[in-house]
Image 1 (tube, chains in turn blue, green):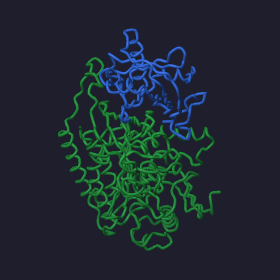
Image 2 (image 1 turned 60 degrees about the vertical axis):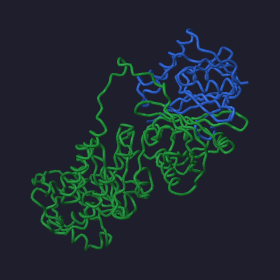
Image 3 (image 1 turned 45 degrees about the horizontal axis):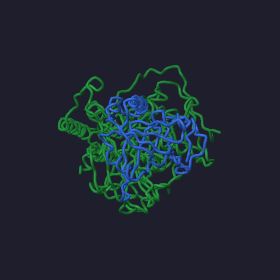
Image 4 (image 1 turned 135 degrees about the vertical axis):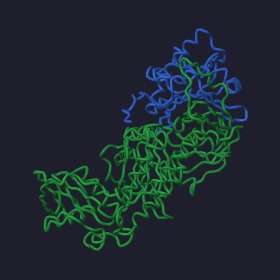
Length: 165
Length: 461
């Protein structure tokens, strides 16, 4: 089991691009775009929000296999992390959780706008109703392209390198 | 299943894709990938640069899933894939390796990583992810009228016809290049373009440019370096969309290497034109298999150049190549048509003195301490200035330059016209008091509007 420190929690809450991976019983993988994330207070569990409109097969896989992987990437500097773990719970997101989804969408729109994706397009991503998938984080891997990509994460999480563009 | 050829923009690498694989133990793995290459309607290829978890997974369990995005509409597409085979040579591999090195060279990473293989995947299914986007909200995203495809194609065809006409009417190399670049802007909206011609040192010299202000002419690109050098070496057109994202990706790798104490020694090579270009297209100008130049275009719009643009501009590139070849082999001393000679400036000598220094060991001329020109164009200028200083001579012919062994012009395909264009433009930029004006085809006049002080030294050091 891995606990996420404050720097990682801040990173995950900063409007990073998320991806959620699953696989079926034949080990055929399938992924979807989450519309929100929440790190639980313990830092050991994460709840991911997946839109009902596009995530049905992925949610079915997660329900069946209980294995999940998510990637979080900051487009500005390509810093990236992958979290892997065991699904503990799958249910429909509550009305109280909708504000967290809306907050993520707003952050994501701000993140992607400088990279040529119009804010209006991001805000059009189907997001409600959503599944809430809570999982226990077992492994955290560095996914930033380069020599340490794929290696287990070791604190501290470095701040972004200056980006010249 | 949708046709992959209907979504070419998803394969431009502008919005990174996501790739999911699974180990034999049932552990899914997901990562961002910078580009998916379209091979044909049933196959895509992914670059294999690193031995990572994704690579290990697909080699034990060949299935993969990729999410792609349209940079135009932000629609999402899902490809279900199965690894078919890997290629480490051949056309596909060479194409992907060249593309990798183009961007790597701009970030000082050329040769640091090499393509290990082009992994070709069979596309088991390709679907438009229905419901990913909600209908547009007119308050946030007001509908815009965009030209229909037929309308746009008609406009492009008219532009092509107009430019083709200008190529045919051009009477000299300088007129040809300037007219074409101007027309690319006026007729087709390509605001930033340049033509580079090869010289005897195997470098490409910017001989005409448009949309970059007064500078740019004379800038050199080594063969095989960056997009332009790679296109020249491979003699095949290349496009890079989403340049900013690609540069960020490679700069991240460079920063990670530096952090790990494995920083590459090479420096970043600036982009040839716009510092903030988002799309680049370079086309070789070929006569048969012989390279006579490179036409390069840039844009701040990531999607400025697509497959269609590349295809129809290639037709134009062939015409420009023929025009360059024709201008280079034209009769040396035919009369220029009326208006073709470039008007001269004032003949009144100004009191100013300009100091020209030749550094013999470097074949290089400075004017008032500032670099002007080097190599054969420098030798030509020195010959003209000395003749003028010696006997006041002002009119010269291409033929006499060709017969002067001391200039070092190659016996065949000497590119004299392009060297004179380069010299003329460098003078216009750095020393407008000295001008070279064509008077007839194959003859030109040296016009001097200042006092000249000629100095010779061995080297600048």
